[in-house]
Amino acid sequence: MPIANFGHSDKNVLLQHGTTALLQLAQRRGGQLHKLLSGTSIFEQDLTNPLGRCHHRDWLKLISHCQQLSSPELPFLLADSILNNKALALCQSLTVARDLAQSMQQLLYFRHQLLPALYPQLQLLDNKLLLIFKPAIALGAQQQFISILAVSFIIKLVKQQLGSSSNLQVLLQQSRPAYSQHFAAHWQCPVSFDQQFDAIVIPLALWHQPFAEHNPLQYRQLRRACYQVNKRLPAQRGLLEQLQQQVIKALPNQLGIEDAATTQQLSCSTLKRLLQQHHTNFAALADEVRRDKAHLLLLQGNVSNRQLAQQLGYSDEHNFRRAFKRWTGMLPSRVKALTL
Image 1 (tube, rainbow, N blue to C red):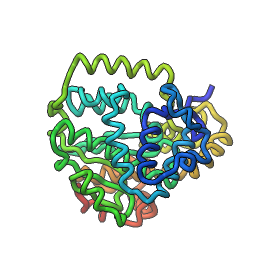
Image 2 (image 1 turned 45 degrees about the vertical axis):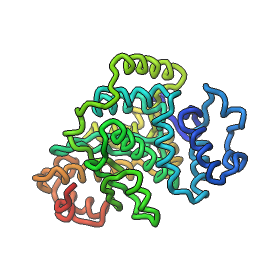
Image 3 (image 1 turned 45 degrees about the horizontal axis):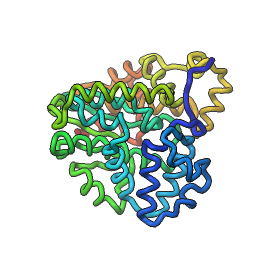
Image 4 (image 1 turned 90 degrees about the vertical axis):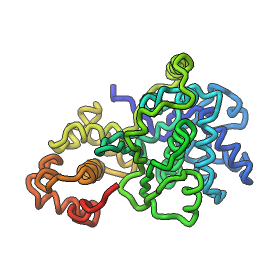
């Protein structure tokens, strides 16, 4: 049996875990329900079913329809609505956790209950933590919306429990949009565009700062409720996430598609076909992993091109520099000058 992973057609999003809130917000901004649901397999009567789920492709379709409303504030408002939904055990557990460390541990473990399409990574950089959001499956034009939603969710949690988000920093891959004032208004922290990652930079000093609403008993009760949700929502992982983890684990050796396919218990031809559905191929995905790893090592500082080449599996510095220039259009020495 192949390793379980979800795709666009799997019912992996609970309707009550964000979908209905998105529809309500969109309707308040002029969206008509029948048009928002057009092209999906969701019916109006499904929206009142507490156990109802929708295909992931339907979730992306709903976001696509909402993006046509020209309401850039939607992902910010949706994040607030989800976080403060009293019916969602996962979200409520985050607010009564001991601190940000416990809250993020909880969110990352149960994240498939909210946003299975994103695959978060935590990286330590000196006295900061970098929380990176990577697509677990191909998200297309909806990736920006989903990334902003995820970042907003974390920032709103920090503001709610620690009183301020001003010490955070957000990195976004997208170019600065015309509606950039929404980022300042909702996040109240520095935002950098045209970055390598969609990420939040979190000072370590905030990691163990006690939450305002910490309640150990309620946290344990809500965590048990999250496990109950798991019984009807399997914790499957996206194919892109699984393959990226394989490539990272193999470094400094460079994983080949044959070995990746064997680990996934798939034939090479089947893996290639699945990756085509995600609009990518194995070589491009492996390059992306090495590029991201190189950027993280460069941000840590005091690392030579020779060391980078060794850690990323290149035979010499020249081959690494050439690959890095192909990935980014810049030489590593240029990126070394960047600081968070």
